[in-house]
Image (tube, one colour):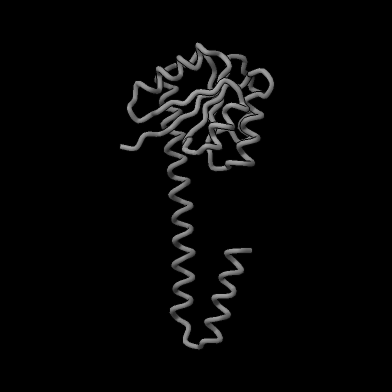
Length: 167
């Protein structure tokens, strides 16, 4: 069984502990904590994070700031925002920026686990999709090469494929 590493970002120690307790009831989740956006970015840059759960309202940078940064630097990393001060407008803005989901506090443990599992499953499917696309491109390239008899045509195909791949 694979263990998913989840980063929970919240400036409130009670909220961090509560999220950790809910998630670590399942052996499939390992929780890492951060109390600010900057601290969370350091942890993310070390690698291995499968999902980020962030509070919306924090001092300095907000959860929305984190979503924007991650969308640019780590586009495949999924983010769930949680908040006790949510509005429809903030939820819409979060989704437009790239947040996967938006949950209001107080958290319902069962609902929270379902949202987390769904986010991790979507990440897994997206990764499998990227791998399949890569395999399909490789198959197409090898098929084009194997059908070629003339050496000059082979050079041209290989050159074209390299240009496509490298840009």
